[in-house]
Image 1 (spheres, rainbow, N blue to C red):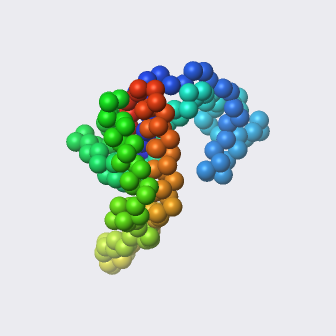
Image 2: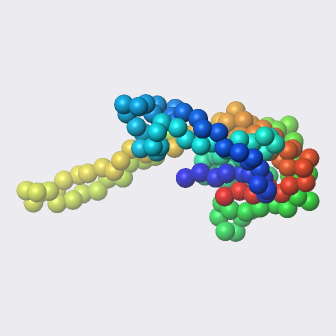
Image 3: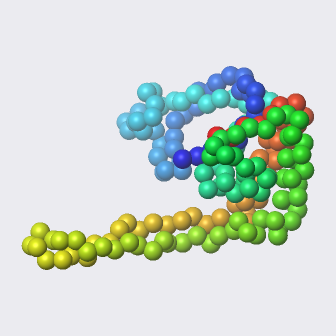
Length: 169
């Protein structure tokens, strides 16, 4: 699951056909091997000529960004800010980027969660110990937080200049 931070306006002006690929998953769509997401090896990507390209982040990262900006959402990871409040968010972003101490409580080294084990009855009627799957939580490094907040800053700057609000969800 992921969250998009975007401008509260129709910001893309056209679509561009680009070769279909999923580099994050190590996949490249070819004529011989289709990825399953396209019909002909191409997808249509929106073109953001006004500089207000949405910022897409994982749910955990979105929670950190929302907390750092002082945005609480009762409904979960959905919300918006009207254009009048965008300059105040931009000020908050500058504080977050300038002060490492503000970001420190959100940093995490990540790692493996403890496995769950349980005893079940085996096929032969004897107790058998089974263990759950290995689960790894990703790290939340300071560099990662700064990189995402800088992207959100760029979006907020564009929105402030054009008098647009911001939404996430």
